[in-house]
Amino acid sequence: MASPTPPKRVQPIVYFIGLTAALAGLLFGLDVGVISGAEGFIQKDFKISDDTIQLIVSALLWGAAFGALFSGVLSSHLGRRKTILISAVNFIIGAILCAFASNEHMLLVARFILGIAVGVASFTAPLYLSEVSPGSVRGSMISMYQLMITIGIVIAFLSNTWLATYATFDGVTGGHWRIMLGIISIPAAIMFIGVYFLPESPRWLFLKGFQEKAIGVFKQMKLDDAEIAAEVREIEDSIKVKQNGFSLLKNNPNFRRAIGLGIGLQIIQQLTGINVIMYYAPRIFGMAGFEDTNEQMWGTVIVGITNVLATFIAIAFVDKIGRKPIMYAGFVTMGVALIAVGTLFLIGGETRMIPNAKGVAEASIVLKSLDFAYPAIFSLLVFIVGFAMSAGPIIWVICSEIYPLAGRDLGVTFSTGTNWIANAIVGMTFLSLINGVGPGNTFLLYGALNVLFIIFFLLFVPETKGVSLEKIERNLMSGLPLKKIGR
Ligand code: BGC
Picture 1: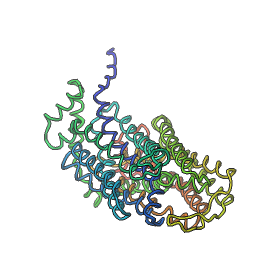
Picture 2: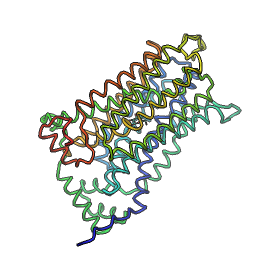
Picture 3: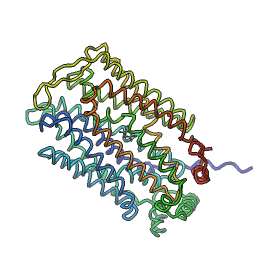
Picture 4: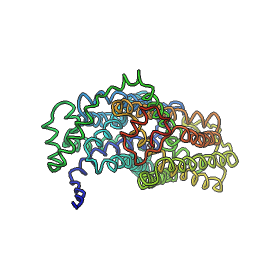
């Protein structure tokens, strides 16, 4: 009997490629995380209202939606590598413009420009990663990208904490929001240099007819002849299927169902309320009664670390116990946790007159004692665990699995675009909700939504654990109900 071939050792260069491309994930995370520490200082400096702050927070997200929607075209014409390089330049310029914005209007525009880079990177980097990594490590490469996002968020929180309270420049200690925003140009420059030395995606090279170059890339990755032949066969098979997403969208109701599922899942991911915490954590700590900036910033760091650590739960179990059980557990956890936060604000909140950015005292609801504050913060952390172990990574996983090959590019464009649009709407409405109906009702609303979303999973979401993409595609296109396309 022939002995099974031992799995090939993946060459270090492949990990170098993966890590460099995943830097795009880190930048994405840095940009998501950085605003939470900066927005309070920006508001004081420019003396602007909560409405304007919400616009500044969400300008980046609108930019990202815009970037994500046209990055399919860009990366198909210019190649993945060049597109990521352009986004790195855009990151650098955007970050510097933010740092030097002389008023809120300039900052708004700068954040939109920076957002385009985030959107382009959020589409192109995972695409590049999935195309360049050999089959045996593809899953872990994509998970690494997700993990890098959460690590980027924590690094931004840590840098914010240092710049908000400890760092002294020009005799001023703390409050350095311009440096918070500008410092991101450094990792962006590092990404530019790293990506400059990366090879182009072999799949894209094949698509454009540069077979020799593609094989050169595989050689550079030190694949042996048999591995190269297998990769080439796989690429040739997959590019036989021409991308015709638009005509599928027009003519094929089964494809439209998959698009609907992806859009629904991404709206749900954002309506969990995760980014309310990512963008406004220090403010939420303030509402819980921690008035000291230092406490607020360290609290935010704990949120970020919890987010990273809980992501490992998903990575460990997503292929073992499946996507749906983890989703149910995560959404129940999130729902209960946010309902607890809301209830604590309703029973333990008191109205205090707190000076706003213009120095005018305004009525704000704050938790009256630590007996309420600690359980509220604990519940918020439980919510983060619920998100990071479920909706965070798994919704991206499912969205990469449900589209038929011929419409995958368009499908991913739709789901990524929806993610950013829903993200922007959440970022743009949180302070209005807090000021309008109060923190208690706002958190109750998000908590109730999380519980409601479970019905969506029960009715529409398939279990895709261990099922080949071909089988999912066959089931979808034969008209099986969405819930059953993973069987
Ligand atoms: C979401 C982001 C969110 C991040 C938090 C991602 O999966 O798409 O909107 O900020 O998780 O870790």
